Image (cartoon, rainbow, N blue to C red; front, side, top):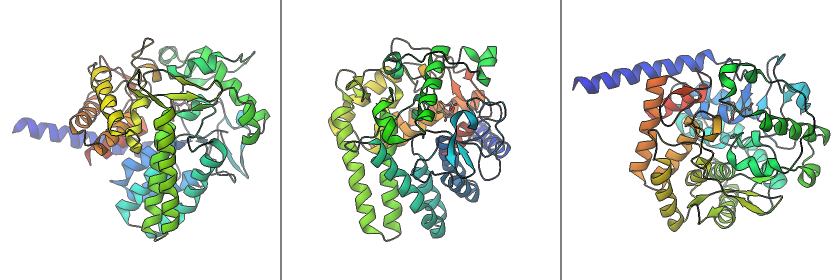
Length: 423
Ligand code: 9YW
């Protein structure tokens, strides 16, 4: 019918715009999340970008992944930000972090390792064995770092809210409340804009982010020191879900290279993390997974979208999935658009990770739901995501009630995941 043709036309136009956004945000070998707000390479942003690029420009996707991996620290940490370009005026910039190696300037924390999933996707799209052989070692070093430096029984911990990728998640309130940031002086670019101030983390949050950063810098980013002293040590449910999937994806890459022993080792690692998550990170009361505070040994009982993402790693048992699916359809489908980042008492539909819908968490959730054959739920998450971008453009996040676009425009992972969903 004409209507269907119109729909297809809109979609083609939108795809063309998505490609334009990614090209405009591209620098030398990598893509910035947002030209205005985030003008450097961010870890999991680049991974989502590569997932989207794989279907339209596989050479650019491969380069995106390899540029990111080239910033892996000698100890295996893959940084959250790589400052390939001059960062004059950006806070916190390379001088503040004082981290990295040789002449590679970076932040001193990591981010959820979506990069392994992106690398597998690029490999399976291109069949390029040379690419696969080049990425195996840095991926192995990075995932080994998580296990060696950041886990006790296979469940990994994060030591900064920025490291989780969900900076001001209400789940971090309790751990952040416990320590006094002292007197921290700083100024951050996005807070200068009056329009954005009420859509981003508050000063209360930023003071603590900066205090944690400075503590890490004082410890010279030594994990063995920070393991004992860092006041924020949280087993983030999203990072662990992505980590499980990363281990599986690395195993698949090893298997395709005929390295069966390594493949088996990473499959076992994935299973060990799944088991730890099922035990310690599941909340029967909330009917979804939660993060766990390593400092106080307690669950952080907040209903965030991160608690649904374990489906991406095949973590929930059949019984847990049944409950989780009910929580999803009752609480996270209760708004006009799925799936809000948070649905608890402090729900704030326009503020960052305290309510808005984000394309990246929707993508992780949608992929995971398909893994559990929850087709209707997966279709709804995908359809809502596309509807939001069709209506508002590739915004950073969206109000789940009105659908209004929020934060940056021309946001790279929103464009990239639109391509992944419609390719
Ligand atoms: C920061 C770049 C990053 C994302 C994070 C998001 C925000 C703030 O922007 O972090 O300065 O890192 O919370 O997930 O990677 O888009």
